[in-house]
Length: 331
Image (cartoon, rainbow, N blue to C red):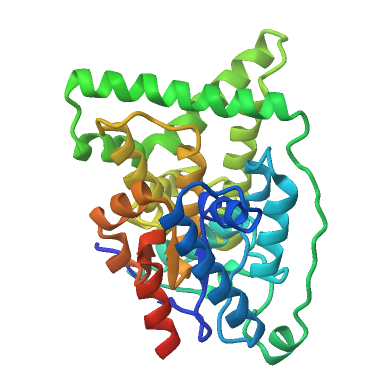
C-alpha cells in the first residue's frame, strides 16, 4: 500500500520564517547587520510581510521558536510579534499528535489517502473573518528555557552526539538509504529501549531518568489514543503493527524528520547546534505552509529531497526574496 496525502492549504498564504531569518531581520532593524546583501533582502522581506499581514492577505504565524533565542531576545520578540500579530501555530507536539490520530483512523479503516488541512495546525481557523479583523498584537514573554546555561549546554550536547554519529557514519560509508531506513524506526526503537530501562530501574529500586519517563509517557499516550480510536482494549499487537506500517512511517512529520536526519547524518558537513530544532520546525510546519523561508543550507537540503514538490511549498532563502515578493504581490 502506498500512502498519499491531500493537504488543504490555507486560502490566505501562510509564510513561515526560520529563527535564523528573524534574527537577520532583527539585526538589520537594530543596525547591527554587517552583511549588506543579506541586510537588504531581510529588510525587503520584513517590509513586505509587515504590510501584507495588516491588510489580511498573508499570514505569518510564529512557531516554537522563542526559546531558541538566548541573546537579543527583546528585538527578536519585537520582530516576531510585528510579523505574526500574535498568530501562532499549535505547538509541534499537538500538530504531530493530531496527524497520528488521523493516521490511526486511516490504518484501521485501511484507507491509503490521508486528508490533512492547514486547520490541523491551528487552534482555530486563522482565515475566518473574525480572526482576520480582530487580530491584535500580543507579546507575553513566557520564558520556558529556565536556566539559559543549562539549555545551551543541552543544545551543545545534542549536537556533539549527533556529530559523533555522523563521523562514524562517514567512516563506515553509511548510505542515505540505509540511514533513512534506520531513522524511520528510530523513534519507536527509542521508546522501546526507554520502556525497558524504566522497568529495569524500577525493579532495582532506582529512579528512571527524565528522558526515559518522557518516552514512556509518549508511548502510553499514543496507545491510549489507539484504544480510543479502535475501540479495543489490550490490543497491543495491532498497535505495534500500526507503528511498523506505512501509515505511521509515512506521516508528514515522521517522513520529513527521517529524511532530514538521514541527510544530515550522512553529509560531509558538520552538525550545527541548531540542526535538531530545524528538523522539528520543518517536519511539523512545512506541510501546512505555502512559503518556508530558512537558511541556505536547509533550503538546498529540503529542495534536494524534493519536499517542496511533495508538500506544495515554496522553500526559500533570503537571496530568493525578490522572487517571493514578485510572485505573491501578483497573487
